[in-house]
Length: 502
RNA sequence: GCUCCGGUAGUAUAGCCCGGUUAAGUAUUCCGGCCUUUCGAGUCGGAGACCCGGGUCCAAAUCCCGGCCGGAGCACCA
Image (cartoon, chains in turn brown, green):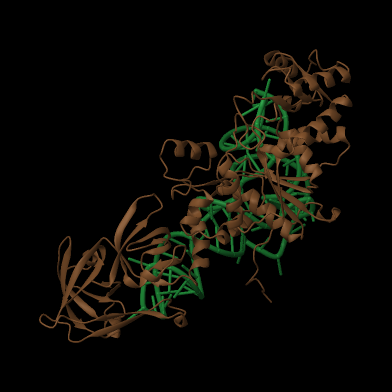
């Protein structure tokens, strides 16, 4: 009784899921770049877990740094599009820059209860104090004083860098990074206006304040994020304690890398600025936009992420693996067509009659139909011309037999850089098969269209596609036989396709 | 340097918490056979791993200690 056949790999259960009425997860990107494969772990895991427990999945834009990690308007939509494409549609969406007053409210409460303070110390001095586990001179002033400073902060009575709101923790905490962490600061908002709310707010919450408050307010039960946030959990737990809240269950997974491609936002942005990449979907990038354009399916990405799971160790994915998953998805559905890269014109002589070739769109699904080509030899010479790949002709030396798939067998007589000559030898497939001759694909000259394939290194391969490709539509994913799977990008008088993988 | 994590075949993952029929399973990869009018798919077979050293125990990938290696954090970033 081995019922392993259809056993899809499943996610391990979420910790303490049964303690909550409904599981709520969130994905909270900073809209300062497009999404890429590195983001997939958070997105897919959050979404899939929410689905698995019939819970909710929330998208929350964390755009509270108008200066250093400046949000860019176009990315809000691009991120929504990416999530859409991944079929990880959020049930709710929030934008932190719309919620600034809420963070102010909790900052005030923290201040009032003496759990936070507005520090006016010199940053360098403060740093030394904290490292030495000593309070700065502001820390122990009465709450009223700090509340007053806070009001002055909001009113614009301080300049950028002069003050910072800090949450009291434990000055003796072994990790200096959690001691009295900063929660809000002033931004020179005239100089660095926020793309959505402009110069409306001078005081901006830092990650732990905004994220911590939101996770509680939005009812997040399970936080799934990268392990770079491990100490943020420790920091936020102090704030939760001050506020009398219970911290959600938190899972911190390791970094995701993929061989050969950089998953660093800053490098992607930099490459774009320098013009190294034409666009966010440059095939060399591992952005979702690029993967999509290359015909990598959202399902393949999801499957791979579920396979990887939420472990804390870093993983280095390999493209081969992604391709293998994608190929399994594409193979049953992709129609087959002929594409000849680096074509040469092969003239076949002594063709005894008119041939009609019927080429199935899919080898295992004949019901999908076929393409049909009629080969009518020239009345005088008895010859006809085909586009065939130079590589195929080169591989079979002069005198060798090859078979044009589903058509007839020929013998190569000569070949140069751009053309070649061959003569018809027989029609029978069995004969070719017995002799184990190479089967190659072909396109009748005249029943063709120019085609270029953009490869994964952004180079372009010029060639010729069969004329049946004229009916293809952008976004179709097909297999060019003996070449690989491609996604059709545009169809006009010529065809442009993006290479996915073999 | 300090504070934390983690190390199973090329890659990824299961097993570890609750030590013992797993002589470590699965996917991919690679090699070979079969099949196939694609260099795709399918199918059959093969190759390939518990970081190292101690300890506990009848028994350790599993527990303990040390080392090595890798990663994360140590921002008025997220």
